[in-house]
Image 1 (cartoon, rainbow, N blue to C red):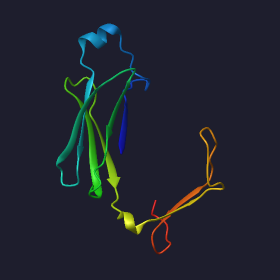
Image 2: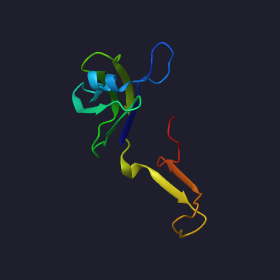
Image 3: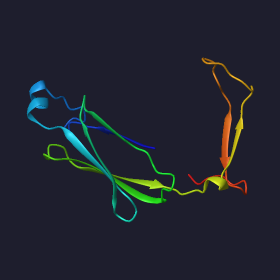
Image 4: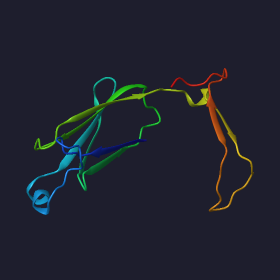
Length: 131
């Protein structure tokens, strides 16, 4: 799952943009988000409005996602906000090649219980993932 939160800031003082009711009525503060796959094809386009200087987008990755560099672009149709571009790297690990070990002190828990334990994911040869 990709979760993207866009913060719209005033470029001069780096504070959240304050929009009056007339600004919201007179301007279209709608953002368009596109995600490009490593081949440069657009795999997702979505729209969201800006509320309290924030806009959010989500995209569920398919199970057969290809590893590589994906580009997320945020633009507005009216040019009121400077376009943004972010590179996201997705690594492709076959599920059966990852060993996941969960160590919990108890076998059962009830709603409201605090759970603490260790989850360890490693490659079959015991080596850790690159950061």
